Image 1 (spheres, rainbow, N blue to C red):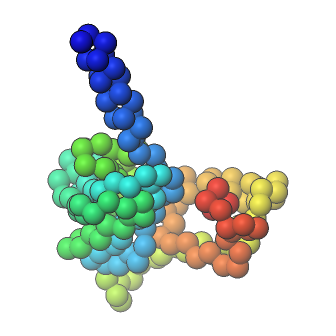
Image 2 (cartoon, rainbow, N blue to C red):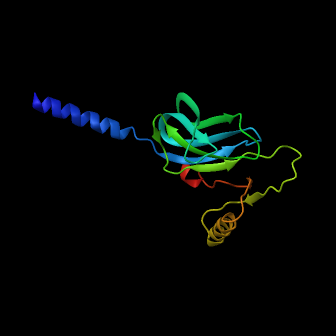
Length: 166
């Protein structure tokens, strides 16, 4: 009887460990406007989608939840204030998928007299030294300048269009 009980516990513990999700891509923003945005990410296994967000990094008081299980997640956040910094985390039910808290700014209202910065990149490449130099220069620039958007041009994935090529 003890053997059966021990076997059952061992089997259940292995099942629960195998259900741990890993963040494969993202999170990233899509279609960010003055009052809304999509927060998107990809996981390695099916799970629900939850985004906690707010204007205070230590108090993410708003939530977007989608109960349908998927590996491609896209949560719509609406009712946001224009030209405002929001913090967010991506989650599965009660588990945060990534230890980081991310942030974004909503767009200013149309007609606002404000500077915005866009980064246009083409042919992201396949790992040559020049491409890493560009990445380093962008990261240095971002230390003191917020980039409002990125436009990717030309080839973004090479050869076999596999996940690891993104």
